[in-house]
Figure 1 (cartoon, rainbow, N blue to C red):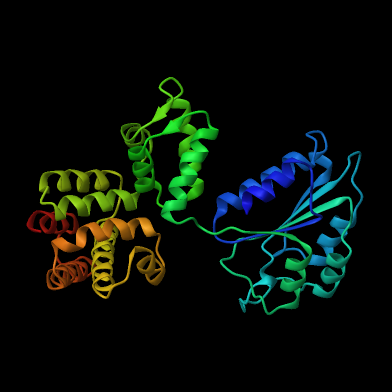
Figure 2: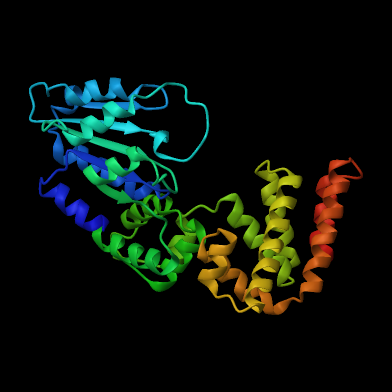
Amino acid sequence: MVTDLWNSIKSGRFSPVYLLYGEEEYFIKETKKLICEYALADEDAEFNLATIDLEETPVEVAIEEMETLPFMGERRVVILHNPSFLTAERKKEKVEHDLKRLEGYLANPSPTTIAVFIAPYPKLDERKKITKELKRNAAVLESKPLYERDLAKWIGNHTKSLGVTISQDGIEALLALTGNHLMMAATELEKLALYAANEQVIDGAMVDKLVPKNFDQNVFDLVDYILNGQKKKAVELYKELLMQKEEPIRILAAIARQYRIILQVKKLSSQGYGQMQIASKLKMSPYPVKLALKRINHFSEKSLLRVLGQLAELDYRMKTGLGDKEIQLELFILQS
């Protein structure tokens, strides 16, 4: 559990080696930050903190850093990024690594150094000896993206740690705008907490007002307007995207992707799959799947396929220069 690891760090019970891996950037970044904050005094960081990219530097050079005694401090921290030798990727390495030497270090790590391996990969190659040795000798954090229920709980708890609370509609609005991007949600919550200091509550209206919509969210709203027959709002949002210098072809591709998601979710739902199973099969966050499930009953597969055919034809016309791109996409919105 990440909380157990963080509590150990905060209480000064450090491991000589840490392995932080996985796709969720937030937990990795926060763990690294805590290690540096609690293991090094402010005045020591300049001399006793080293950062090494293992895609550029042989691991034996990193080991020399790890074996160096701290300068005028209690310990050193060595951050080691991109240990791709822990994965099954077969790309040509820029440098050769002496992994036998690393295995030897792991068996007898320096007592005055904290080595932090940061591997931002979805999985490691468990068959490799070096992976087994590192996992056996390190404090390990596997940083996975949170599912919607856990993410909503995390948002509530993190908001309390910032001295305010968040309403249910505030959580839902934040999830809609940030998806399962925990780092983005954390950044926005800090801003919202400052704004809500007087009211002590973050609500949906506050989230809508302060959290900017990204391109994908704007397209999601655009498709919603199209599906609900709100043509005026759809055209207004489309023109806003054009004013933001978004290309019609990119907008078209994003609209088509939304329709494909609805179609895929509809097919899988009809086969008895639930939200989490669909998200896993489509390799998506559960939240957009949840939103797609709310839409599927309004359309038959036949009608969705017909719209996708129209979008494919429009894509061909745009890419071959048949007519004005902006006008053609606006006509599609008006006629849908």
